[in-house]
Image 1 (tube, rainbow, N blue to C red):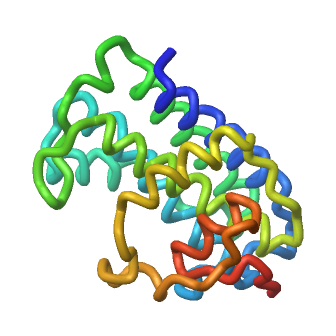
Image 2 (tube, rainbow, N blue to C red):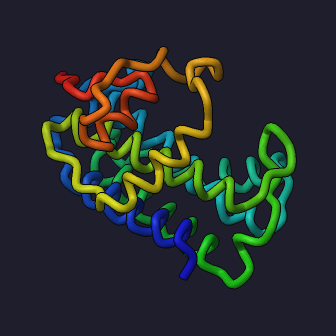
Length: 198
């Protein structure tokens, strides 16, 4: 199995475990990503992973968007907890199945910036799983448990992204000591304080 696929699947397993550790009173807790609380962060990840299958199956972005919008579910009885966790589980299976298909990583996908190699796409998805998995764990007061080799893989990729704050989606990088854990240095690249507390 390809290293990028291994890293993606391992990161997804840890993210899923963290989702199922969210307590009933945690869904509206703040996260290190100041735009989102826990429920909103998970909603973002659900949508992101629902896009993977149609894009990898050759759909253009507009067609994929229609598929994703058609798959959205409304919370039952106004709740978010179990419903969001269930939606995440479904989206995670869809994306992992799509990326695991023979030849999937040799394709190109239609993203908003244009045609993009699937290997770059899966690297960015793995980056999001680790960064937002860290966000989610911090928000609910848990330790993060990503395998060291996955964190190292993502960090090496992220160093090649340049200054992420230029995208408008990240704060300026935070200074982190060179001898800090790799995960802390990765978070620093994304503008996150490794010592963040709610």
